[in-house]
Amino acid sequence: MIETPAGSPEGFAIINKPTGITSHSLLAKLSRQLGVKVKVGHAGTLDSFASGVLVCMFGRYTRLSDYFMATRKRYTATLQFGMETDTLDPGGTPVRHAAIPDRAAVEACLSQFSGPIQQIPPVYSAIHVEGKRAYRLAMQGTVPEMAARPVVIHSLQLVSWDETSAVLDVACSKGTYIRSLARDIGMASGSAAHLGALCRTASGPFLIQDACSLEEFSITKLRKFDVSLARSLDMSIIKLEHNQARAFSHGKPLAQIDSFDKLLSIPDSAAVAVFSAEDEFLGVLRYLDGRWMYAFVFSEAR
Image (cartoon, rainbow, N blue to C red; front, side):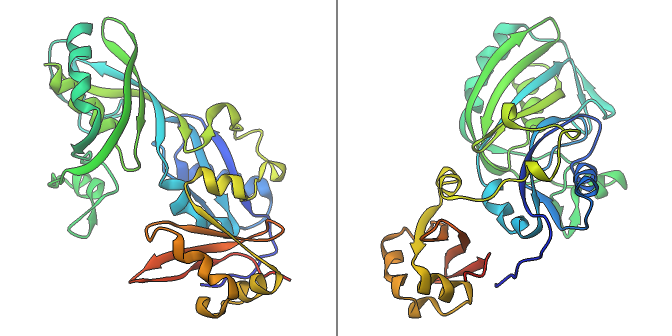
């Protein structure tokens, strides 16, 4: 798909989302701060009660959402023991109470949640069940049947403990629900638990110490996509000389571009970020149905 320059501010920004605001509302505020109407998106929502790193994209950069979203995430999660809520977070209604476990019981069960696991998502989530959002069904009084999904917990460490709660450091794959992890650790430790607080400390290569606040955000905070970032997102790189870059930017069939043979050695599963010889970002290629094709063209080379 070919996209032409929109002529308005575009790029991406790393925002330290505060608690008490939805990701959608935050995007609306950021858009207003730019002072122009522009398409916006983010790479992985954070619930209202959660805070931390939110990768926000503006203009044509929303086309990069899937690549930003596919990276691993890292969280500081506070598990509150003794009670499980229907939403698995502090805003929910209590549905189960149990005795509070000791630290040893919690530490003993953490290993079973490391590595590839099957996880049942929360009922209150945006996952589609029979064509409807699960949370909408739950709000209407219907408890949807949530199928287990594969996720990966890359690391899980107990940071601190007090009499009723535990603070965990969690590194995980895309699609992991920390609310579900809190529920499951509560059950595995012989208790009940919900997620009392959550802070995303990293999203792919983006760290919370590099994020700006909502108040600090301005057009000067917008970043551009470059070769080093593409590599950090595990994308393959191809660079095209002037004539080939122009052909690519105009959507010429890939087989007719002289440098196309450079793609033959790239693994089929790889996403390929395409740049000009001067490192101008041109677009992304994907491998589908046995052939390389345009995912999108970002810029028109001159």
